[in-house]
Length: 402
Ligand SMILES: *Cc1c(COP(=O)(O)O)cnc(C)c1O
Image 1 (tube, rainbow, N blue to C red):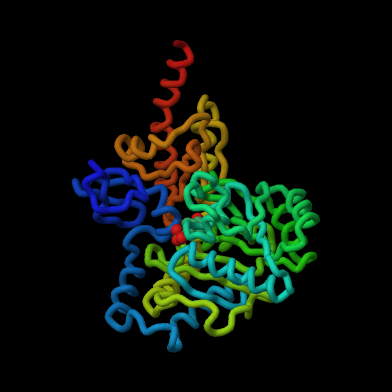
Image 2 (image 1 turned 30 degrees about the horizontal axis):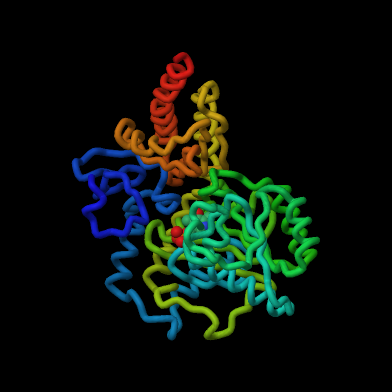
């Protein structure tokens, strides 16, 4: 399908398939072909496609009230703020429309926190291979030179260290007195499914307390049950000072949140931050319903059970595969790293296995199935991935003989 004839900016290179309908873990294209969705719109549709209760609440609220503006109190926003704070141990919430915007909010909080401490040039510690978004500030926080290329000069507020390396953070602390916060994903998603060790997160918490830094967790991809806990940092038994959420919060309806507590809870005064669409009645009511369903069906527990099944199944099926370097993950965030570029597998998975996957960091297959999968569907993902990867074996054996 020639992309050049389109009037879309070439920010993406989409696959030629276009889906017109979904239900649960399945999607159908224009020809009526059924696909199994192992990526959930990149960790967005955790409740599956066209969830009937989500559809019903969107329909009902759309018939009542979409938007009024933050000039006025918004009841559903207050309720959602209370819900999220109760489930996370946070104290205050700010609502916006995308993950990047939530992280922008967190970064502004870090700067305010620094200036309150009389730090003239506040610095934020960020990680190698991090992904925090595409706006200018979140791009600067992102640890991917290819994504940053062409957009300099970048915001100079960041200090980058290796992930899962507490000594590197200690060294940064000793060298840079201007540090005011650490921003980190509990599991790096775009970065290739890398899980922060619980000890490392606990040590980060201790360092932040010691220096008066804000510990800011980007839970946009890992949060809301996906890793087998409501939030990824809960595996380490810590509470952050700031946490951002987006992706699964509206099950596809755009909404994001920045939550804060303690020193970070009340840094904004009126006029310092805002968002026209942020926290509108429709988005907030949808998110309340999403949380209702997640709690009622205990989907964080399901993610733990299904994630163990997926990881175990893949390890059993692929442990001897000559091209597989590592199979890793937490809950329903799973990565299969190969010893070669494998971007073309996305297309082949669609064509040959009718399976939706993504590839990240060029060599890692990423699986983020909906949390509402059943056991058979998880096993089906394993079977389709095994079939998908078997020709790679043949290719590899063949080429090594020639
Ligand atoms: C997707 C993602 C973002 C960016 O979210 P957008 O809604 O695309 O702006 C930020 N951080 C993480 C960890 C993400 O996975």
